[in-house]
Length: 336
Ligand SMILES: [Fe+2]
Image (spheres, rainbow, N blue to C red):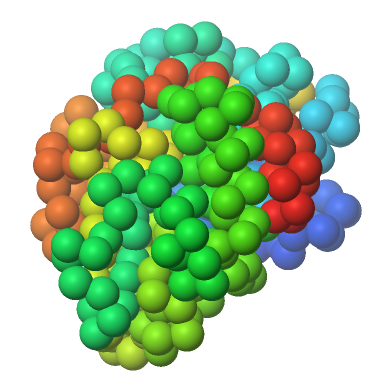
């Protein structure tokens, strides 16, 4: 066993090409991974994969829907072997266009079934909890909304923030749509248009909450935990409320991985997806500074996080989260 472990430094190196660079990197046998997750995290996981298998991986990074649409447009000519996202709606989009191969059963079996679609055409490998980040000098616990639906109250006008254009927040809206229906979602979005300040990203929302520019914002948990693990400069005057009781605001967003149908390296691509959900791959996720939740059956999430077992997310079929519909409703509401 040990002898076969020798891996050259070159084999471990991960080549990175920038998003938007359309040319194939001429990397021979390397896999091409279209990556919409945070690049630091995926680089670390892919390095672990290369170490274990000797298979090199080229990363092309971009945003969830940018890369999902690219895979669909490229069709059979897509150079992508594997696709990973931050949020599941972009996976569902690619799946709905028939651009994935079914994930191997052994890989699907590594992850609890609620994190993958019943089609088995992609698999969840990380989870992120919706949180309500609030300024702890301006708000006390009893002033916080009980449900994410309550931020439509006029009391929040001009006092809350969201990163409306990002796939992260749009996944949260998809959960609101799936759990409350179209009419309630339209009403909620119209109220958000009045109440919410729009920021370019989750970190910008958190900074604005911390500085007191706004009282609270809707983000994912790891932005706050990462800041606290570093200097705390953008979070020291903020605390997190986790919504409870299956509230849509307790939504757990699933990051997915799938094998692209156009891939000419199906076996190697399946190996990469298997690795991302394996004990070793998940350990890298747990130990990383990403502070997202590892979710495989034998994974232990980072102990700094509120335990996954204490979260009370709504039971949502990941395959039902509808990205294009959310974009349409948010556009109608004037939020994007
Ligand atoms: Fe993110």
